[in-house]
Length: 334
Image (cartoon, rainbow, N blue to C red; front, top):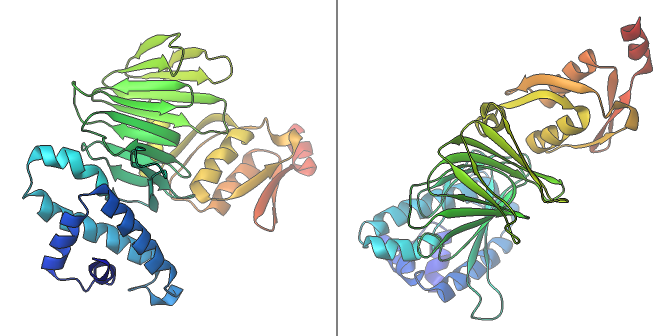
C-alpha cells in the first residue's frame, strides 16, 4: 500500500488505486500509517520539489483532491457508515492556512483525535463531520475525537472561533474551553478563549446556548440572541450584557471592529490579524481607539493610530514598539 500512497501524493495514482486507498483508510491503524508515510515523504523533498509553486500550494491541492475523492466514495456508502468514518477525512474551505494533526497515544485503548490549527495571521473555515461550519481565527486550535457525530459532538477550543452548528437534538454539541462549557443543538455563536487571557467570552447571534461551569457546574445560564457572556477563569464568575453580535463576529469576513478599546487590547487584535509582534511602554497602554479594519495594510493602521493619539511606532528587528510621543502630546494638550 505504501507504493499507492506515494503515487497518490505524487498525483500519479489511478482511479482504482485511489478507491483502494480510501477503502484501506477506513481502519484507524491504517490512517496512522498513511500520516507517517505522508510526513516521511514530505520531509524527503526539497522545497522546490513540490508540484506547482511550492509546499503551500501543494497542501491546498492535496486538501481539495482528498475532498473530491471522498465525495465519490461517500455516494457508495450508507449514512450510518458515513457517520462512523467521516472523522478520518478533512473537509476544508480555507481563507488562509490550516493544519490537521492526528493524535494517538502509545496505548491502543486511547481514541484517535483530530486537531485543527489556524496558522498565525490566517483565518480558516472548516466543515466538521456533522456538517457544522467553524471559522477559526489566527493562532486558534480546535480538537475533536474520532467518534464525533456518531456518539458525541464534543469539541475543545483554544483561541477564537465562530460556529454555525448543524441541528441535532439527540446529540448536542459541546464546546469546552478552560473552565466553561457551551452546549448547543443548532445555532450560530462566537467563542473567544485564548489560553493566555483570563476572560472567556461567548456572543450569541441566533438560537440559544447553555453555559455551564466545566467541572463544578456551579452555574447554568441560557444565553439569548444579542447577549454577550464573559466568564472569569480566576473567580469562575459569569457576567451577561446586551451587545451587537456583529462587533464580535465580523472578523470571520476579514473585518475587525474596534470599539473604545485600549492600545493593549488593540495590539492583540493586530497581532492575530497581521502575525506581528508588538511591545508597549507603560504610559501608552491606556490610550483608547475606535476604528474598523478591512483590507488596509498594517502600516496604514499604525499611521492612523499615530494621528489620533500621541504615540510613535518603532521597528526593532521583528518587533514593533509603541512609545509615547511627547512632542505630539504637548501639541494635543495646547
